[in-house]
Image (cartoon, rainbow, N blue to C red; front, side, top):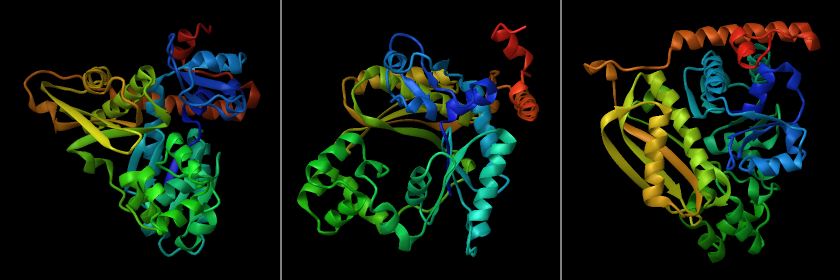
Length: 391
């Protein structure tokens, strides 16, 4: 199963502020070069999308609710999300802060109709935590991911091998997971407008298609035949390294956008390091260019790091020294050479997990009361009321 939280950051703001429900919400970095991280579905109707400069989003919908990114809060909800999934399977692999792969072989391997089980899981996540999600179920990670993207929000799609062509074939080429907008445009120039047309072209080894896709071509055909990676790895298996990657909405050399993505990944990696009680001595940045060539640069530090700020600074250094001005279709950031800082003689600082857990339970309780109160629900946590100037 691949489960993807719908417009996660925007939904998180709706959970925190019930009065925001259903309104255009834009979450993004502040400042003159800020970009949209997430837009609610109501905001997307105005053409607002991830990666758009904030000033353009304001022009598109001046009445939208513009919220700064609050990663500690989103990370708390993400932990609740993963903990919830852990009740269904011991094999949960986070793909990012708002999506996970879950191995449900034991639970659903012999089920003729897995829909009731998936609906119950999806409904429970919404009722208990307030998070909306889309689910894809398949035999491989690629097909499960395509399934979760197939119907949003709150969709469930089962992709069986026998249904791949009928289900995915008619979809526009842009919807193929791993193919960016610029590559899709080049494929369209060759007359390849759908996934079915792509498969047909790959089966005939057409030179134009192979040239556009490069080394990614064999994987594309394998995926469309129902093959590919099917192993879900638990978080604990990632003890030797932790990495994240983001495929950009379109190929870009925008330094502000790329640094914003590096900052997002730094926060996710810091959270994963904290949960493992580890620090890292090596930082690696990866960039995949429009021709699908992947380039990596690493640096090793004398002293281990663990905070989002430290990881971002090293990632920024790698970007500025090796990739500035490059056009990217994917950027990635990772840490390795992990170790347990408790083995060192110096005192290290970590996230205060008891406090976060207390905040988590308190916020969920407040949200539950507000849902029961309906539109009149105005309860909120005292520290947030003080922060927002509410008496």
